[in-house]
Image (cartoon, one colour):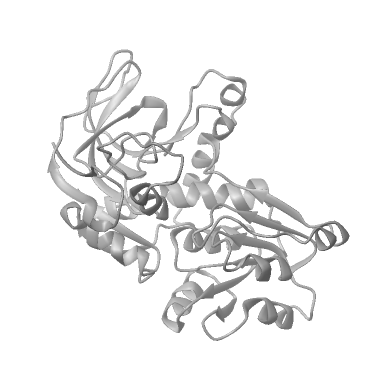
Length: 342
């Protein structure tokens, strides 16, 4: 098969479009003919490499996978040709966390296309049958590929961890990112007023079209000051944080008393400082979020099927141009998702 993979960590130039061995589905697995895959910032981190993390090389990234069943392994009763989406989190299926429906707490939880498991930058990928979700018939492959990882993460952040309620004020950083564009929609679905930040007026216009109520250009304004101004000094109930070091202090300053800050990443650096005096005196809650459960994916997909949530596609490129797609994401030129057509 053709695949886009890397043999060493580095810049976009390490991605090579080349022949690779066809994967074989094992017991309880299916072989998916990939039709489209979406980029996430995780792809960038995996390509660059992290200290102490040994990714098996050569490696095929890509966690947002949609396509058709091409072959089934032993013990699988599925129809070839069925259009499917792949839930990106793989777990053992046997431990207490998995059996209680909290599979993203499994000690063996891994992301397909993450640091250790090959993903969707290829014509074929083998995945567990339990990770398949039937693709809604009116979704294109490109729109479907804009959904899995960012939407399950944003849903877990807002609905499960932050427990957003109708009437809450929610601040979404980085509205142009996959998580940001998903979080705006989910927060509005829950009845919140949404504050969105972006670095250009064009991106803010697109955020408004998704439902954002208060628009903040972080290239021209201190978003924490603007949040205080727009809330008469109170602050917001929830902050959706995934930027890290560059925004952390202002994110904390944006919170109202008893506010909840939920984070799923640190693109500008993972090490931050927390003022414990403010943490306990204001009774803030800080929560992490790592993808989400299969149950949550089923929950959010009901709203996708109803067209109340939608994947946001910025542009579509062929798989052979994955290096350029990575450069687009690193330069933060996109709004929503960059999709690779396979």
